[in-house]
Image 1: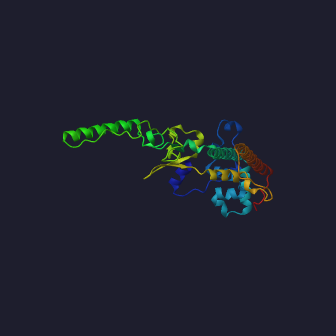
Image 2: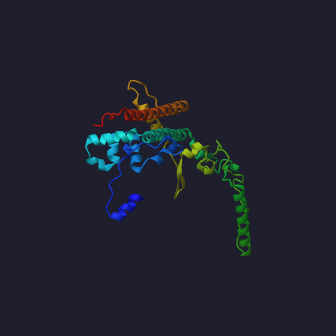
Image 3: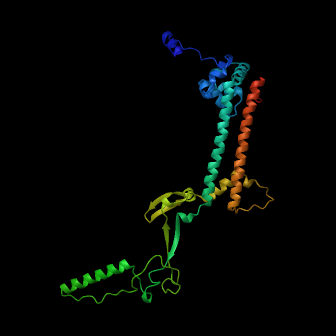
Length: 308
């Protein structure tokens, strides 16, 4: 606020604020209970973020403090080292690296769980093919069979037609022909002796209620599409899921002399998941080790390797 007021009063822009390298870090007592990021100015936060991402001190300083690009290289390194050595900056770098490592571990776990759920899912929870008896399988004399409701409606229409013909003095139709009779249902199984379908029955696609899907089925479900022929259920690509898991664990990096079998059972998938989690934890340990290296370099007063 003071700088803004001075600029408004004088009309002259103030120089960029000097990095706090020459100022001591706030005493521990003053920092108690205060999140580390609140102790850093915006450019210091940018500097710490770049260090946490693996940039060396000089590169991070040049990007966080653009005006330093006109300085001599030695001056930039000196300022960068001094700022990186401050306790609140070191703490922030270590915190950011720990958060990134944890996030990476969580991301890997979530992705693998999603892929494994998709691989284990039974597509029949979403849609299936059902084969039922045809209309002639169980009808009397293998004639076309009605459902009970259809038979009742057919009788009523026949009776109305007879009444209308009699009222108009026309020839009325004969007695109602029930043909194969009633009792047809899609739940009936095909009749192997049916002269019409030969026991093959009639195949139909059955869609399941999406509100009943299990977790695995939801992972496999990729939405629906209404077409002129009806509803189309879209399924996620399980082959793609298998390939992604295989690539993650280096499945295709096996020596060419080995016999590689693409058939993977559920026990092997569990082992793949456990191995991936182990690798993720190791990556987190490497990130934490990198943070300790940065802190050690800052405390030792030397520029990180590759900075010149």
